[in-house]
Image 1 (spheres, rainbow, N blue to C red):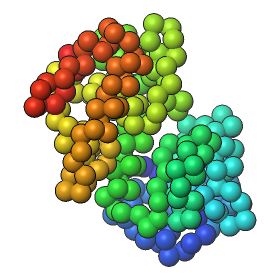
Image 2 (image 1 turned 180 degrees about the vertical axis):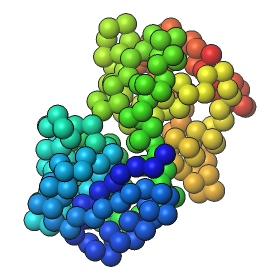
Image 3 (image 1 turned 30 degrees about the vertical axis):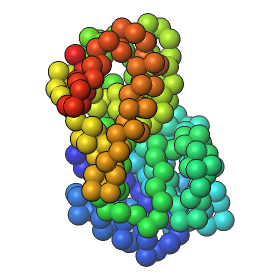
Length: 229
């Protein structure tokens, strides 16, 4: 699916390269090199997603992200933060806490950019697309807040937990290998990272958070992978 995207970044070379990558995939892309132009473009065009620099001119992109989340007209726009400087775990966590849907470090890898964009946009489509499955499992999804409702209780999930859950919900009854999950959900390059420990931890947390009834249907298949029954 093609999307309308705005890039908010004062690095013209970076913006041009990212614009080229996205347009080659069929997306409609606009570039804003100042916070003022960015605010105006977002409100006038209503994009599906934005790539927003953390250090955007004289302003903090995280504050801009919080602005978007605070207004009804822009609340549902997917926000992917990008940064060449704010690279520490604390920086990434703060960006996500301000409402960003993902956080990428410059220089960007083409495959990772497209994978992250696809993952974010699928997350926003999940409640409508997965309606039959959600009813079957007794779940309710809030993609913006990354929350899942279970028997009237709201369960906050991390980005990866949310994406992992929706990946399973889209493929009920199918055997999913650890390698497949690491590559398609976690966006890891299997040639560089094929350690299942990270996946095991996230699966365990998902089972714990969603309760025994759901956990019993998320089956581990020894030497094969996982299956959501």
